[in-house]
Length: 609
Image 1 (tube, rainbow, N blue to C red):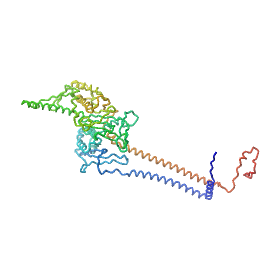
Image 2 (image 1 turned 120 degrees about the vertical axis):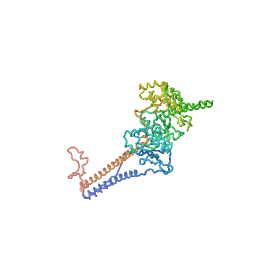
Image 3 (image 1 turned 90 degrees about the vertical axis):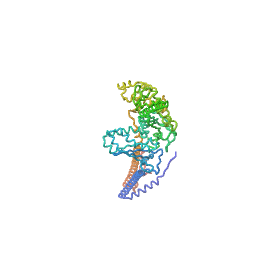
């Protein structure tokens, strides 16, 4: 077996030398020496601690003093620029201001680089109207009409490609605070209700965001949701590989004045016009692929149920007027002087309307009376021209009114219908929820063929408590209009069974304002993230300082122990000049009882042969 040897002679000689030096020191000198060692250790500890604190402070000062983003010398309205409209509603009048800013850098120390929009002459784009918004205290329903000129002015100065995500802020000051809170609420409720109908640029994709947020389509939990592969958008630093996430739902909203459709485009379709696509990020990080969406969103002004009914009535009157004019010209040609315009004799023109219940008639315009015919199929046919599909298509394929619409993968999609989709299906037909074209047509045909007297009796008996008399009169038209838009305009197949009409989602009324709030507050998590990061950083430094404290305490204790041993050695004089007593050998302990160890003993020592 191999053996390991080491020589202790040098170490023994060093210790002997140190002991001799310490032996020559007095007790007072040793105390001074120990005190110097202790003070030296404390000094080293404080030096390191001050260095750590100074380093931490320098890092914080560097973080705070970082300069903000500078204003670019040249304005570039690229695809990533955002616009915001602020309306200042004062006591004497209201002013509109327009601002724009590039995307946020993602750095928590940087603010948004917001600039006011200037006209070509370098003057701010501002418009003022009078009087103040508070003057509508007695007539809150007119508040939106009052604001409309400012909104039209602002919309004319914002590129159409940016209309979808333009943010609107209406801020009221002292004048509004002087009127009762109930009147304030009524005025703002009117603005929130009517502005998106007349100016859909401010609603944009916010309604789509709100719907999918409530349905938890933006989450990443373990709940079961249909998934879809999404092609990555070309963002700086992002991967080009497709990734999988929860499939979002599309949205159809048929209001009174306009109709809106919005759905996510998951593939790379570069043929879609820029002003038809809204690309946005709901995450707080610039390259958050899981929360970056590309949504096709289009609003058809004049395609809402009430506006469409007005256009339909005008179309019937124009057709009748043209027909009468042709008849008049024909009579003139055959030289019948008695042939004059019928209105000269105060005659009324009767127009058959298949969209009105049978036996119902009313004067739509002076001299023109609509007579109900009550025919659902004929009503659908007569509404087809209102889709304006003959208009030149901006880019194939188009849905209606010449508007491009990308392909919808119906087998892998889901849509939610709001407003008129719900009211028409539920208030009278009582089939709200999952849409089925066959059942809907059966209910519509039955209702349209019912005469007006019967419908009036149903209303008087309150068989349909959610429907008023106006709803009974318009029900046949609205039922025909939404199916015409859905199947003929948007080209939804009649076999499609993934459209759901709703008023509430999870017992919540979904408003576009929720989507606006989600989009506008997407950077707020950065504050909490920064606060958490600072707390973790502080905890890390505290832990390091604690470790340093422990190490210094160990060193200090070690010095004290060494010093104590040295003093003890000095006191006991472990290196005396006299010889030490010799220790008995093993033979002493192995001697049998009654025998003495062989050897000679002198006093307290033994001498061995």
